[in-house]
Length: 423
Ligand code: HAM
Image (cartoon, rainbow, N blue to C red):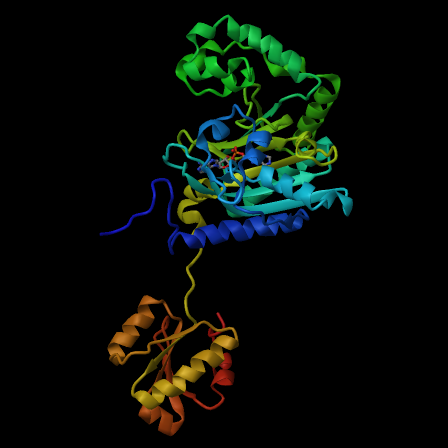
């Protein structure tokens, strides 16, 4: 009986992996330009890391995490990471990265896990490319990471994305907004969905994130957070907007965007695409100035984002499809002595950086040529007993179909002289 993969857990197969590599390589290149260093963090963490940083009343913590008992610590739960920020901040605090450098610009790539209902662009194991800047609270860095994202989208050839921007205020001003919003919601409480009713008093902002038709309708006139921002948050938000205007990065203000995670304060953003259906966010993030301290570190501001690779790949379609690797040379042999001679040549050439392929089992010349064609090899070298004796093989250019003799001693040197061999 066949064993199949789990729903929401996808294989990424050759043919698709080329686009994934294209996206990952371009992201690495952009991170390098912006002076980010890579960080690799575990996939499994203590569950409390996520409940403490993302918030107890978020969808992720309430119902989407993959958790399991820690066999080594009775009563403790472990979780597959649903996102990267919490782990990065945990690592930052644990390794005391703030001791050696005041500002850390970190990026990461890898799988995340959320038990959501799978659909187009939404998986249970999905991959993020994320970045976090720790140690800078100024609005310039908020604008900088948005510009980094714009550069990345441009480099990979993605257009038509919309940037939505909001400020979520801070510990000073948000409580007043929260209260005001709660009063507004209480007047409509009975009509809200059961989920919102349950979470409303603990975290009224969550209601603005509810996708239920009725809740959306009931909260159309909800008070806007923008009217409640304190002086500092207003200045910060104003500067981010000015910087974006100054660099011609268009955005739409969306005072309802509260994001699905509780660690955010001040700047929050989402890049969306109308071509993705309901799962339209390609990249999202924001500021989280209290998180480092909440996780036991010194008071340190933070800001970052993550983008979903599956969604980037969906949008790129064939545009991102990089040509799959093709061998420079396919070695065709006739007879065991030629096979032995070519077998050592394969390794010699690979060690020199050429992609070379050959068959091991006895196959007809025709079948070996077919294989070379299938692999889209650029050249074929044919060697049999005759050629070994004369010291001259036959080299065929698979594009032009030209064929000529090539000296087998000093073959490497000879190949290097052939037009088009080095790609
Ligand atoms: P997030 O909005 O939960 O933020 O996820 C960021 C991106 O990951 C989304 O915009 C989407 O592209 C992708 N994504 C999320 N869930 C799925 C899924 N189930 N299937 C496919 N793609 C998905 C965060 O995770 C924050 N840690 C971002 C951040 C970093 N904020 C500050 N620093």
